[in-house]
Amino acid sequence: MYGEREVFQWLDDQKAPFSVRLHIFQAFQMYQLVVEMDKKIMELEKKTQEEI
Image: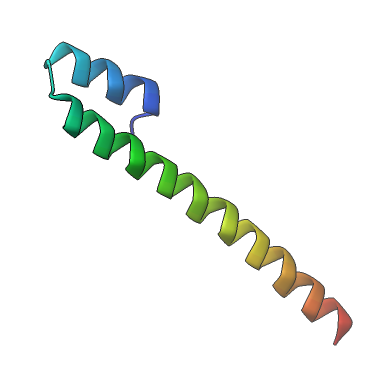
């Protein structure tokens, strides 16, 4: 899997339109949000299991 920097460098090399770059940037942001939410859910589940 490629990192954000590699993807945007590739988009620059391909001279991708701004709208494409923007959508990909938004996808990266959504991915980061989902990862953070998943971490928090896992922490809450762990705390719940410890309380039981």
